[in-house]
Length: 311
Image 1 (spheres, rainbow, N blue to C red):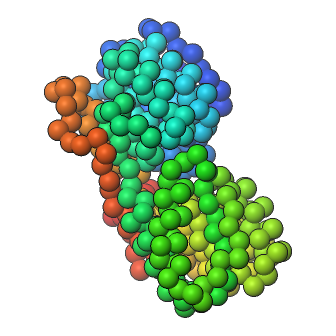
Image 2 (image 1 turned 90 degrees about the vertical axis):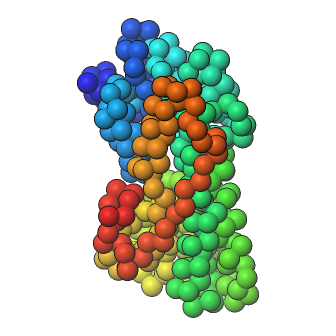
C-alpha cells in the first residue's frame, strides 16, 4: 500500500511532515520532487511510484517546493523513517549536496533525476535529460519558425537550477548564429506560469515588435501564451521545453508552436530500477552521470505525446 496515500496525501504538498522511524517499512523508497502543481514533477513522482510498487517497494512521496531548507527537513524525515533509498529531483544544485550527503552518511543511497548537483560521488546516480542537446533542437525549430529574423524574447528558469543555464546556453549557441534575430528582452520567470504571464505582459509593453518567445520550460511558455492571447498577439511564435500535455494541446490547437520532450516518466522509472539494482547487488553497473536525449515536439508528432512520453 502506498504510504503517501495513507499518510501524506495533502500535507506533504504544503508543509513539512515529520515521521517516526516506524512510519516506513524496511522496503520503502522515498520520492522527493518539486511541487506536483507542475505536471512535469507530477509525472516524475507517478513514474517513480509506479515502478517502485511494481518492484515490491512501498513509497513515501514528498514535495519540497524548491525550498532547500524544507528539502533538508524531508531528508531528515525519510532517514528517521528508515527508507532504503531516495529518488530526488532536487531543490538546488549547490544547496542539495548536504542533504544527499546526509542520506549517504546514514547508509541511504540517493538517485537523482532531472537536475544535477555540483558534487560527484555523493549520489549513486544522476540521471538527467540532455538539456543542451534538447535546447539546440528547440532553438533550431524556433529559428525556422521565425524565418531567421525578427525580435524575440527569452524566458529563463530558476537561476539556482543548472538546467536553466544549460538550456539558455543551448538556445543561444544556435540562435546567435543568425544576425537578423534580435533578442530584445530576457528575464527569469522562475519556472512559474503566473510569473511568466506578468513578465510577458511587461515585455510586450516595452517591446511591441516582439515576433517570438523562447522559453526555458513549458509552464512558462503557457504563461507567456496566455498573456499573448490576452493582448491579442497570437501571431507571436512561442517555443517551450518539457513536453507537457498542456503544450501538446496548445500545439494541436494552433497556439504554441513547439516544445522539446524530456522523458520525465521514463527517467524516474530508470532511477527506481537502478535503486533496486543497487540495493540487491551493491552497484548499478552504470556511471553516476547519465544523459537521456530529448525529442522535438511540433504539429507533426504532438498527437503521439502523452504524459511526457511519445507513444
